Structures are given as C-alpha cells and as structure tokens.
Length: 79
Figure 1 (cartoon, rainbow, N blue to C red):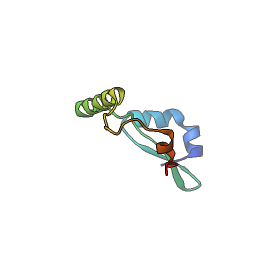
Figure 2 (cartoon, helix red, strand yellow; figure 1 turned 180 degrees about the vertical axis):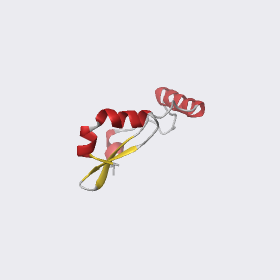
Figure 3 (tube, rainbow, N blue to C red; figure 1 turned 120 degrees about the horizontal axis):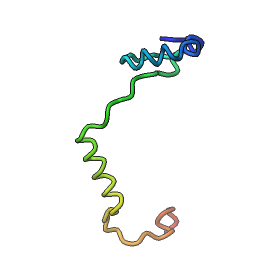
C-alpha cells in the first residue's frame, strides 16, 4: 500500500513493482481509493467467441415477432 504522497514521490518505482507483477493499493486519508495492477492478459478464446457472437446478433437484430411498435406502446399511453 502507498499513500498518494508516497505514490507521487515514487511513480517510477511503483510502475516497476507493477511490471514485476505486484498490485499496489493507493490510499487517501487511510482509505484505499485505487489499485495499480498489471494489465490483464488477452481475453480467452471462449470469451472472444461469445463476444463476437453477441455483436453479430446485435447487428442482425432479434426477431421478437411482436410487430411494429407504436409510439403509444413505448410509453404506455395506449388505453
């Protein structure tokens, strides 16, 4: 853990510690307000497949078979 003052005075050393794999908590007034951690690795192949599938589905649209939605339907004004 580092206070903000310690972090500001030793940014290069803190970055070197993070590059070595350490996660550093940064504190302000005795409370942890941030974490400095190594960048996470690339996404797993399974995650990427699911993400790509979700994007494709959004681009194609979903057939909900509900017909055209009127302005009144959107806001509940229909009697």
